[in-house]
Length: 68
Image 1: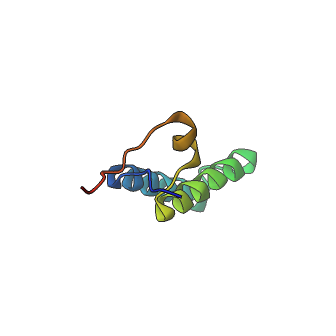
Image 2: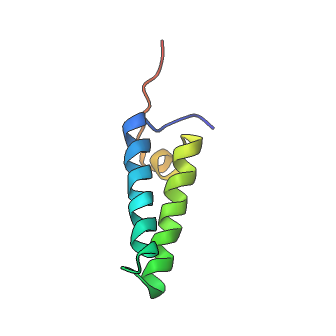
Protein backbone atom coordinates (compact mmCIF):
# COMPACT_ATOMS: atom_id res chain seq x y z
CA UNK A 1 0.00 0.00 0.00
CA UNK A 2 1.78 3.12 -1.25
CA UNK A 3 1.21 6.51 0.31
CA UNK A 4 -0.89 8.76 -1.89
CA UNK A 5 -1.87 11.67 0.39
CA UNK A 6 0.08 14.86 0.94
CA UNK A 7 0.30 16.85 4.15
CA UNK A 8 -2.22 19.46 3.02
CA UNK A 9 -4.81 16.74 2.29
CA UNK A 10 -4.21 15.21 5.70
CA UNK A 11 -4.61 18.57 7.43
CA UNK A 12 -7.82 19.40 5.62
CA UNK A 13 -9.33 16.00 6.41
CA UNK A 14 -8.42 16.27 10.10
CA UNK A 15 -9.93 19.77 10.36
CA UNK A 16 -13.15 18.58 8.69
CA UNK A 17 -13.35 15.57 11.02
CA UNK A 18 -12.90 17.78 14.09
CA UNK A 19 -15.56 20.20 12.81
CA UNK A 20 -18.04 17.35 12.34
CA UNK A 21 -17.28 16.03 15.83
CA UNK A 22 -17.85 19.48 17.32
CA UNK A 23 -21.13 19.89 15.45
CA UNK A 24 -22.28 16.58 16.88
CA UNK A 25 -21.03 17.38 20.39
CA UNK A 26 -22.90 20.69 20.50
CA UNK A 27 -26.10 19.07 19.11
CA UNK A 28 -26.10 21.09 15.92
CA UNK A 29 -26.55 17.88 13.92
CA UNK A 30 -28.59 14.88 14.94
CA UNK A 31 -30.35 11.82 13.64
CA UNK A 32 -29.35 10.02 10.48
CA UNK A 33 -27.33 12.97 9.18
CA UNK A 34 -25.20 12.92 12.32
CA UNK A 35 -24.43 9.22 11.94
CA UNK A 36 -23.51 9.60 8.28
CA UNK A 37 -21.26 12.59 8.95
CA UNK A 38 -19.59 10.86 11.91
CA UNK A 39 -18.84 7.86 9.67
CA UNK A 40 -17.29 10.24 7.12
CA UNK A 41 -15.25 11.87 9.89
CA UNK A 42 -13.93 8.49 11.06
CA UNK A 43 -13.01 7.55 7.49
CA UNK A 44 -11.21 10.89 7.08
CA UNK A 45 -9.23 10.33 10.29
CA UNK A 46 -8.24 6.76 9.43
CA UNK A 47 -7.13 7.65 5.92
CA UNK A 48 -5.18 10.63 7.26
CA UNK A 49 -3.28 8.50 9.76
CA UNK A 50 -2.35 5.80 7.25
CA UNK A 51 -1.59 8.30 4.43
CA UNK A 52 -3.62 6.26 1.95
CA UNK A 53 -6.98 6.94 0.32
CA UNK A 54 -8.53 4.10 -1.70
CA UNK A 55 -10.63 6.59 -3.66
CA UNK A 56 -7.48 8.40 -4.79
CA UNK A 57 -6.20 5.10 -6.17
CA UNK A 58 -9.38 4.56 -8.18
CA UNK A 59 -9.24 8.10 -9.57
CA UNK A 60 -5.48 8.04 -10.19
CA UNK A 61 -4.74 10.93 -7.82
CA UNK A 62 -1.48 11.17 -5.89
CA UNK A 63 -0.80 14.29 -3.80
CA UNK A 64 2.13 12.82 -1.88
CA UNK A 65 5.45 14.48 -2.58
CA UNK A 66 7.89 11.75 -3.54
CA UNK A 67 11.47 11.99 -2.29
CA UNK A 68 14.10 11.39 -4.93
